[in-house]
Amino acid sequence: MEIATIDEVIEGITAPPVAYLVQARAHLDSLTKPLGSLGRLEDLAAQWFAIRRGKIAGPVSKAVYVFAADHGITAEAVSAYPAQVTQQMVLNFLSGGAAINVLARLNGVEVNIVDLGVDADLSGHEGLMQYKVRRGSRNMLREPAMSEEELVAALSAGLALADAAFANGNNLIAVGEMGIGNTTAASVMTAALTTQPASLVTGKGTGLDSVAHAHKCRIVEAILSRHFAEPAGPRDILRCVGGLEIAAMTGMMLGAARHEIAIVMDGFISTAAAAIACGLAPAVRSYLFAGHQSEEPGHRMLLAHLDIKPILDLHMRLGEGTGAVLAMPILEAAIHLYQEMATFASAGISGATA
Image 1 (cartoon, rainbow, N blue to C red):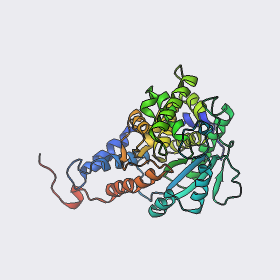
Image 2: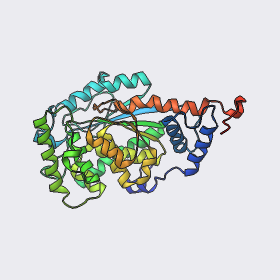
Image 3: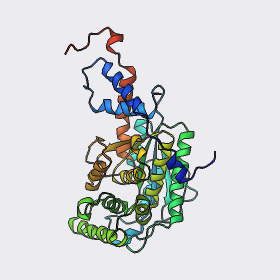
Image 4: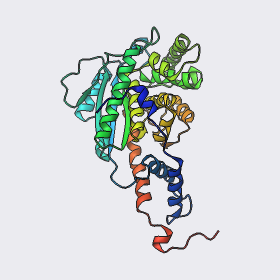
């Protein structure tokens, strides 16, 4: 298969025709239930029907992609955990011992672990998808996190993985991550995209105390002053802030939307990647489901920015794709209700009279 360029992929993304949503709503209203009584499940089913262009029959083929990379900003003491935890957690994923492994096994979701920029030599580890661009992004407080060439390489890795998911028959993917320091990157992205102040978009990440959290807010504000004194476009925001895993996630969402694959965002970092993808190609939004709303304040702002309601709200802040995978059975339930419920006509049941 010929590999499309980033610009070609963006140009090839189209939103599902509104007619499919209209058709789905008409069918949902004909089912043996009071109008709208399945609530958000009806919204989910209608969006799935539209994404699939009416081809709702057939199995849901699920996969989660966990993108891993290190961040140079950890040199500024923005995380409660050392940077080495990124590589240690990648090994935990590969051995099946992390939360995402448990939830994926439970829900029949294929797990893919991708190294974009872990600051360690992880070659030779069975099951690890190798797309390393460099061993961690640069310290964005001091310089842009990525060069233009590195940004293109990371975006292209995501596009290639989207092509592979399509070739594999996946029609529902979850996008998660692992990278110590990446809530700082997501906080900067959120502030740059929404123009909200650093203090409102920056959370405690891996569990910072109040003093460390105040320090993190100051770092985010300093990064914004350095790179974004003037408004910047989504691509420049991504290049300056990183990280490599967020860029690859952005690329995968762009590629998945081009292939008309439904995407379940996870938490704060995953949604930051989605916001960048939507900034580059607004039609991506039609393919997005928000798995959950995390405890990070910036996540709530990004979901509002995208105007997408989360499926779950369990006060989670783990990442890894956990919230996205947890939401998949809810989406599947909506799909099965759409497909399998009888209509008033087929069941011989009288409809509402008023």
